[in-house]
Image (cartoon, rainbow, N blue to C red):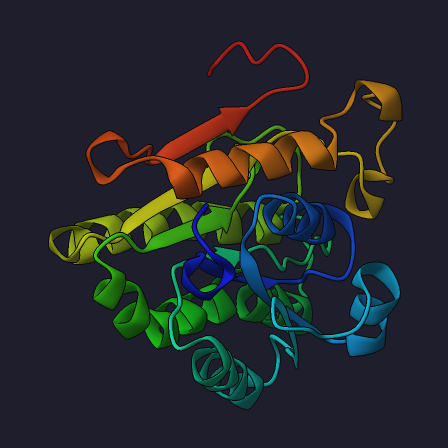
Length: 237
């Protein structure tokens, strides 16, 4: 990395715990400046310490579009650039095929699809200015194949793949590269419901965080559209 003033600036949503927190620790440990969005700013301070020249915290709630606008504007004002966006915040609410639950479906679409799209739109002018902007969408293997009954989650993760590839298509000529990282079970609270895989056999958040950094740091002429990450054998992938 270069000097702090010229080091890359990354925005990470859902950064107060789990995968998002691991990504934040990985990037700041490699010289990045970070703007972290979460519903609970105090949780960010408890995990990463107070704000500084390298750390900026913002209230971000996927259900409140105005928080996205305020966050991106504040980050751009503080750092005068945005090099990368990591759309990590996600909702794992379980809605099965025969569940008539529009409210839950609306929540899943708001968090898993509409919020990442909104942040992508807001960050895009800044990412284009760098000539090497990066967007990493934390998707899921449930966006590539289906092995459960959670139709709402599966549909939204397939939509994230559509968002990623559309972003690649639209922004390629401006040097922006988009990558979808699709993990199987990650050892976080969201995966605690399953007994199919032991926690110690799941993907570690720190491992996934290192892959996010890889996606950000690949050159424009070696971009990866998708990273599929398995913790067990996947016969169809």
